[in-house]
Length: 173
Image (tube, rainbow, N blue to C red; front, side, top):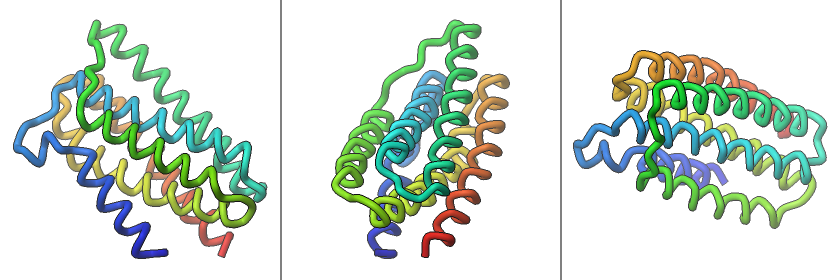
């Protein structure tokens, strides 16, 4: 199981920045779209968990994910509107969405404790990957100071999510 999750983390890390792998720096509109997409992905996973999870701790974690990611995405939408920037769909966003859809389908086949464990393990891996991408790729590549600030605020929140997910995962073992 650990090897499978490690492979998933490595795959997501590679998909977060195909443009960077080619030496190109993503634009602010692309960064905004990637960040927004990452939030939507976690909201959708959390909503699935609210329907399927059995553990009260897993449900509480999922509620936090919906609340926090919706709040950050709302701020992101307000910022791009204020800046008159249109988030730009890109290969990274599309790949992340496809992979997330596949993961939701995989998790959807599980029930009970198996679902709870797989969901929380996925959340740990997902937050590690997104946090790393924010810290090492998206924040440094952002040109607009307000976008960079929003990403930095998001990173702090999502680092807390990673720790929370690790705590819940440890409690499920």
